[in-house]
Amino acid sequence: MPTLRSLRHAAPAAFVCALLATPLSASADIISVYAAAKADWVAGTGDVYERFDADIGYGALLGFELVGVDFWGEALLMGQDQYMFTGNIGVDLSFGDDVRFNLGVDTGPLVFHFPEQDVRGLVIPSFLVADPGVNQSTARSQGKITQEEAQAYEDQYDDYVELEKEASQWALGWNLARARLSVEFALVPRILFLGLGGHVGYHYLINGEDAAADVKSVALDQLESEHPEAADLGVFRELRKSIGAKSIDKDNLHGLNYNVGAFLKVEL
Image 1 (tube, one colour):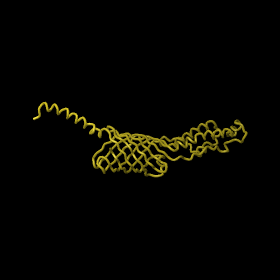
Image 2 (tube, one colour; image 1 turned 60 degrees about the vertical axis):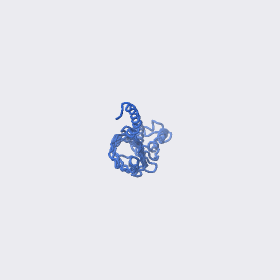
Image 3 (tube, helix red, strand yellow; image 1 turned 30 degrees about the horizontal axis):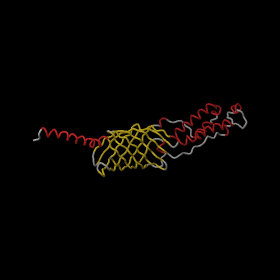
Image 4 (cartoon, rainbow, N blue to C red; image 1 turned 90 degrees about the horizontal axis):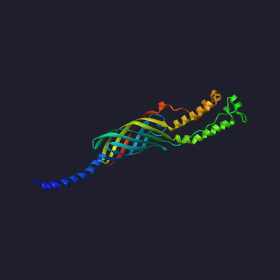
């Protein structure tokens, strides 16, 4: 039967052992890190998804879970110089060991990158431009603008061409809610998994091409207000068509996106 003295010596030893063991057992519950190679079928509403050369993307994801909250990102190659990136923060529930089911919901940004697009410069039709040497008042009486004004407008528009080329390469958005479901098969218990899964997200998304088209539309609105005589000739309507100027349709900013695919995942 243990004596009081032996219990006094055993209690500190037990406390030290428990203290040393606690971080090791709790660390798996507090934080885990994971990475995966993946292939996904990708689709969604809006013009952005129609710009992809392929429906299947190949890439990777990297993330960590901290106190039950997931932080992860993915990158997919969708074609020649075409990429899709997402950042995600969310929560999930997991069931099982050798076969594990995961349910989760996330929110986070969407970023798309495309090759540089050809951008047409502004060329004002000759029937809108008065003959050389004609002054402004005479040109206005003819429903036209002067040669100097035409050159100034074309030069001013050229200043936006490079910005439009850059904007056309990008699309930006946000997944307000992105539900995910996956099943994982343990190849190496608790470390290596082969999985199948999918996501459905509700997003707001603006295409860089659409943003550039809206800027051009605003610029032509200003030009049209300064030259109502030319507007009556329908010249600006033709200019909008030729340079692709149009206002953003707010109804097209929101929609759904989908990912379905397979992945090989390492978890630590």
